[in-house]
Length: 178
Image (cartoon, rainbow, N blue to C red; front, side, top):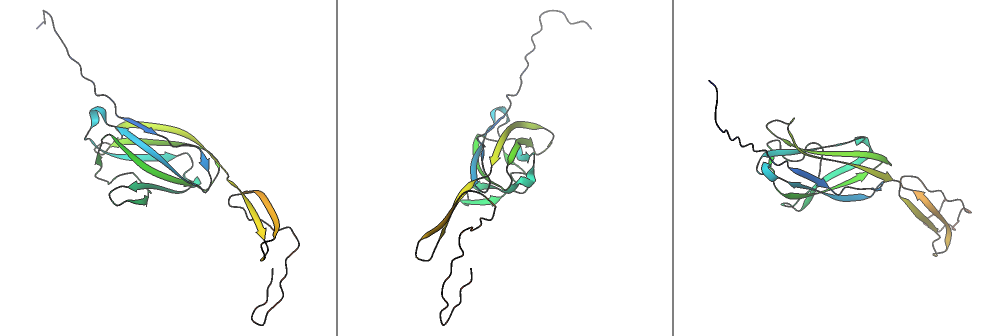
C-alpha cells in the first residue's frame, strides 16, 4: 500500500562520550603524573573498560593508576578497570608514567564497551617527547673539598672521576682503595 499524507520522522542520535588527557612531554627517569577525564554524555552508566597503547611500550619503565578508595598507586599492566567493567561517568582518573628511553611516542587511550570491545565510545591520541634528563655530579673529598664537577651527565650513564685519585692512609682497622 502507498502512504499518503504528512509523515513526521524523529531521529535521535546519541551524543558521543568524550575523553581528554593532559599527558605531555617529560624526561627519562622522572615519575610523570597526568590525568584522563571522561565525559559520559548519552553513554552514562554503560559498562566500559579503558585501553591504552604506546607506539613503543618497551620505552616505559612503569605505568600506574591511582585508586582513591585505597589511596594507593597500582601498576597498570593491561586494561584499566575490572574485566566486568565500570559504569562510564564524568570522572577524572590519575595516572603516572616513568619512561626509560628517550624519543617521540604516540599515546592512544580508548574507552570501549565491555559487551563489545570493538565499540569505541571515546578515544584520545597524543604525541609526547621524552628527553634525557641531565644532572650535575660533584665529587667531594672526605673533608668537603670539591675534587671535580661533571655537568650534563645524562640519566642512566655512569659518571667518571677524571681527577687525581684520592688517597687516605690506612688505619689499624681499615685500608682504603680508590
